[in-house]
Length: 201
Image (cartoon, rainbow, N blue to C red):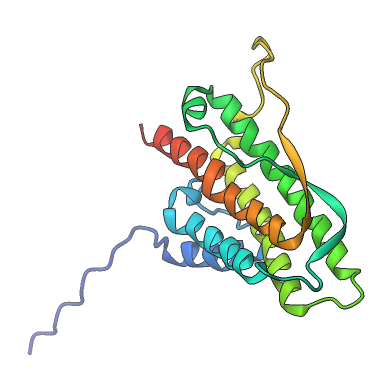
């Protein structure tokens, strides 16, 4: 009897475990060593964070008790003039996104502290804030891997023309999450889309 031939096995590296590990660890805000540098170019990755942000926004809409802060928190302006954005230099786009992400991260962290010090902290709200903190850490790592931090640094001989980051203040968790959601769906999505297309050329 002739033994059946074993199916041919591929000798190439299997990236599936690495991608699965990336999806598991990024929501926790943990860096993944060896993760693909263009992981954020997979639309499912950014969509996941956008979904989490919208869930948090929806969960706090109409919330009154425990959702107001006893101080104003500074957040980035998320309005986008699409005509002006298209005419911006790449460095200016990267700078707006990188500075906005840093300002938003600082705002969410401050909201986390204020919520923890509240007289009657809500566990459900705390979970949404904790998830946002982890998500922003992961997004910062993903953008750094994409090269956003380097693009945001002007060349030594470049003329300094970048306007200061536009900001305003919010006094409630629902407003903070609305800014978070708008930032991801607006400037962050626009920048990563263009950066990923540049990388494909």
